[in-house]
Amino acid sequence: MTDQENNKSSSILNSLKKLIFTDHQETSSEERSPSPIKQQNPTPPTITKEYTNASERNPISNNQLPPAIPITANDGSTDIKQMKLKVLGILERLNEQGLDFFEVWNAAAAMGKVDENTIKAAYTSLKYVDNTLTKEKLKTTGTNYANKLKETIAKETQQKEAEKQKTEQDREFEKTTLNNEIKTLTDSISKLQDDLQKKQVALAQINTKYEPKLKEIEQKISIGNAAVNEVVTDIQTTLAIIDRSIS
Image (cartoon, rainbow, N blue to C red; front, side):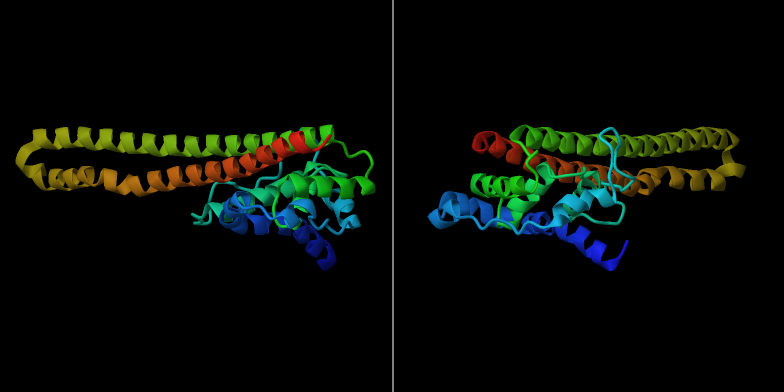
């Protein structure tokens, strides 16, 4: 992929990425005191071939999950906003050919926020580029993207749960083994007293040994699910706006 293509690919997500770091601070105050000018005259996005060509660089079929890009944090990240950036990266790989929910959602975000006015403006502008763009197509593709993200996080969650279960089994096996060894050593009394003491120390520390890893796994699962839930909620909110505002 050339530098130009990389820049195009990155720019497709820029508007949605920016909203991750601004929507929570700005949306609530703007909704309480909406500006009539902003409500009535959102600035339409500049429509380029970038929208129609972006997905052709890396198309994914309707029945195919995105490539293996972990949603749950494996890089030490604990910030849900940073995790949402990962989720949007996966969403871009799911982007299907042509104009659909993804491009309308992103184009609305380019106008500052996603609401009824920006969604309608984005939809109207993009419909000039692709007259096959319809409300039904937006609803169908938006729902499809949300479902694919749910499938991806469900698969990852299942893998993390299996890892957690294996770790718990290792802990229980080691605890059982240590308890059995302790009993044997106790029966041997004095000559094995030193060995017995060491095993008792190991047993006393077993929870401390495994607790950090278990907490780490739980945190990864929690952050991944929280990030996906936020993006899915954003999609569902946008779909509700589409349902209300686009005829």
